[in-house]
Length: 80
Image (cartoon, rainbow, N blue to C red; front, side, top):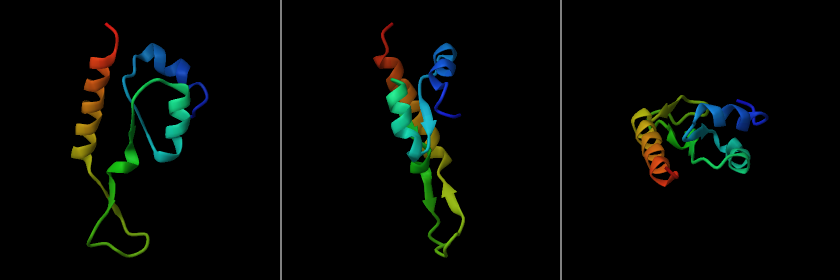
C-alpha cells in the first residue's frame, strides 16, 4: 500500500500492527502510532545457495510468531 492515504485506510479497519519492508518503516512510523514488523527480518540466505542471486528462505514460523506477539503487546498497551 502506498504511504499516501495510509492513515485513512488503517484507522477504520482497526489495524493493530503494520507489516512492511525496511525502506518503508520510517514513513510508516511518522504517519501511524502502530507497532511495525519488518518483513525483511525473516528472509535469510540459504547456506547451501551461496551464489549471487540465489534463492533466499523465508522463516514463516518465526514471522507468524512475531506478528502475534506484537499484536498481543499492542492490545495490552491500548487503552480500553
